[in-house]
Amino acid sequence: MCIIAIAYRVHPGYPLVVAANRDEFYDRPTAPLHYWEDQPEILAGRDLQNHGTWIGVNKRGKIAVVTNYREPGAKPGSGISRGFLVRDYLARETPPADYLESVAARKDDYGGFNLIVGSVGSLFWYSNRGGGITQINPGIHGLSNRLLNTPWPKVEKIREGLARIIDENDAIDPEALFLLLKDTTRPPDENLPDTGIGRQWERTLSPVFITSDIYGTRCSSVIIVDATGSIAFHERTFDPSEYGETRAFVLHTETR
Image 1 (cartoon, one colour):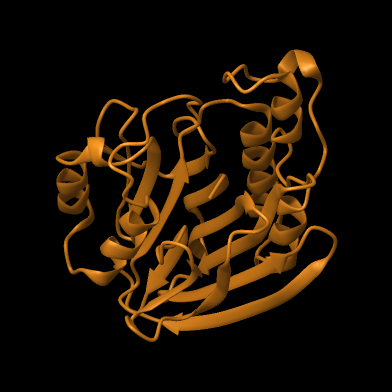
Image 2 (tube, helix red, strand yellow):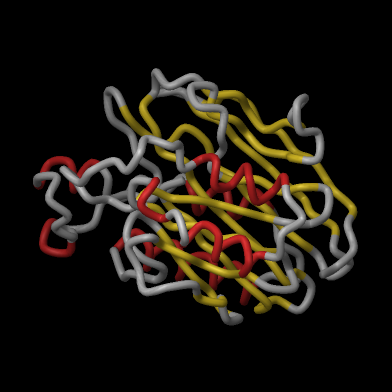
C-alpha cells in the first residue's frame, strides 16, 4: 500500500473504517481480492510475483496492512517480501503486539516498511524505520511511505476527507470512500516533501491517486467494520486508463 486512512473508534456505528490505495508498477502481476485457496481463512488481493499481500483480513476479524518506507538507495534487506508481513499475521493466532515483537527481532531482513496489525479490539503500528511498537489510539490516522501521521500533503488531505465522511454520515457509503481515494490533485511544489527521488517523481507521487506511464494506483480498498463485528471489504482495481472491477465481501465475526 502507499496511502491509508483509518478512522478508529471515532464513529459510533463503525468502530473501524479503512480507506487505502495500493500503488505499484503496472506490469507487476496481481490477483484481485479473493479467499486464498492455499490459506482459505485469508481474504486479500495477492501479489503474484512474491505471493504476499498489501492489505487483508481473515475470518477471525484480524486486519493487516503494509506500506513501503521511501528511502531511495537504501539496502533492500535480505530480499524477503514485505507482503509476507501481512500474510503471516493473518495466517497465525499470535496477538498483534507479540507478532510485532517477532517482526522487530528480524527487522533488518526487510527493506523499510510500516505495518499495521490488529482488530477492532486493538490496533498496533510498527516501522523498522521508526521508534518501536505503538498502540494506535482512537482517532483519524494517515500513513503513506514515511511514518504514521507524517504530514505529507496527501496524507493530510485523506485524513481530512475521511474525518468529514465520518462526521457527516450516520451510515458510511463505500462510494464516498472510493471517491476520496480517486483524488488526483497535486499539491503546489513548495508543499512537496523531499525524499530524495527528484522533483518530478515527487510531483508524480504526490496525489492520493497516482497515474503515470509505468506506475500508479492499482487498486483502492475500503474496509468497514460495524458495531456487530461485521466486516465489509470492497476492492476496486484499475489499469492505466480505466476501471477494472469492483469486488465486495462481507465477513461476520465477533467484535474483539
